[in-house]
Length: 327
Image (cartoon, rainbow, N blue to C red; front, side, top):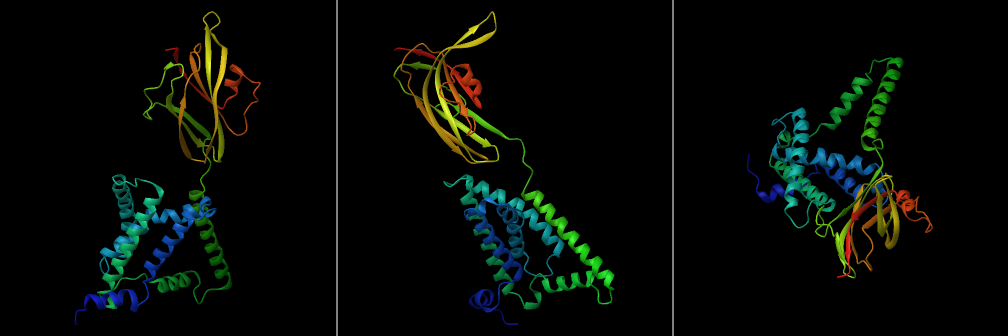
């Protein structure tokens, strides 16, 4: 048989024949996943996980296997499926590792774009390599044969009416089981609800906190809020300079002075963490503690609640022991 020229192969792979059905399913699923990730409102539904998981766990490996093994005699179907999962689990972390050393980093947009480019590139290579082969040697998923086998298995020609009814019930049970499994995976049960509240030093690390202060001199730190409450929350952060006294006889602490420093709102979406830079300058001496209070959107007390009552009413509280000097 006369060998094809590369140009003829390209025409045969991308213009003469239709896209192989298995690769077409991968392309369509990839597009659906991208839409489910980036289209507003849709990306807040379970469709994001439903379409996104195969793009991470199966499709990249499948297109890679399709590019490597274009003949139907290379490997059988079970091996293709197993290798597709295995190579996807290997390829996706490698792509993430490569992105970690680029200016884009490991973020959603670069990861989605990289996976899409990899999947499309492997699909194009697979189409080209299949076009190099005679039609009878090209791998293809026998969808019509699979459909006929399923119909023949569940609805044989000589089956009775009762057998057909039982087959329908069995199919419905299988569909219900698969649907329930998918639902449990993509819509997991809510775990523990909590909020992270933390402060970081000037270098955004848990060290080098500004504890030695001078009146009128600005000092900086970072305030972090992590939302794991399964809903979007607009948190209120308040800061106070406090004079805290400890009574050793009663083993209790009391607030003798409490001056507000700042108050601001921090909107945080579920399962996200916001780190906000914060600067302050004490206006006078006479305080030994810088207090950070966090309130969620349902429990912000009025201005009349002060001292330990306000600290105890906060959703989360942090503090730094400080020394304030005039100069």
